[in-house]
Every structure is written in structure tokens, then in C-alpha cells.
Length: 79
Image 1 (spheres, rainbow, N blue to C red):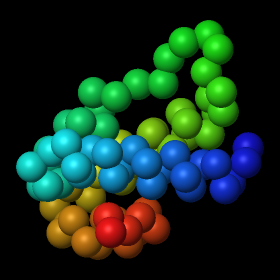
Image 2 (image 1 turned 90 degrees about the vertical axis):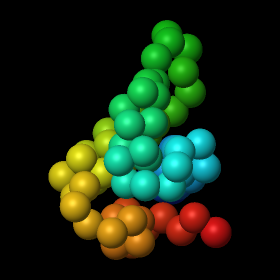
Image 3 (image 1 turned 60 degrees about the vertical axis):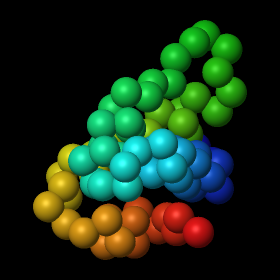
Image 4 (image 1 turned 120 degrees about the vertical axis):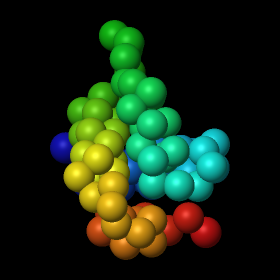
């Protein structure tokens, strides 16, 4: 697995979910769960699936944490 690609996809998924949601932890978690990595010819499938899974898991397990702490835990900046 390419760690650099994984981090890019993790940042992309969280940023897109934050931009499309109301900005709450719950809203971001719901959008992350609505997203999927599918198709036979998806490039970097392993990195995308792992990044999406890790983002979903972080927002599920730490739903009671403030958004900034979850983002810091993932290493994602929304700016």
C-alpha cells in the first residue's frame, strides 16, 4: 500500500464530507458512510478503501469528541 496516496484520499474524503455536511461530527460521519469505493477498474482501490474505512471508523468511535480533535487524530486539516 502506498502511504502517500492513502493520506491524500483520507484528506480528500474528510474534506469533501465536511464541505457537504453541516459541519457537525454526525453530519460528516453520515456522509462518509454514504460514500463507497466500487467498480472493477478503480485505481488505487486498496488505498481508497482503507482511507474511507479509517475515516468512517474514527468518526464512529469518537463521535463524542470535538471535531478538531478527530481531525487532529486523523491528521487532516480543513483549511
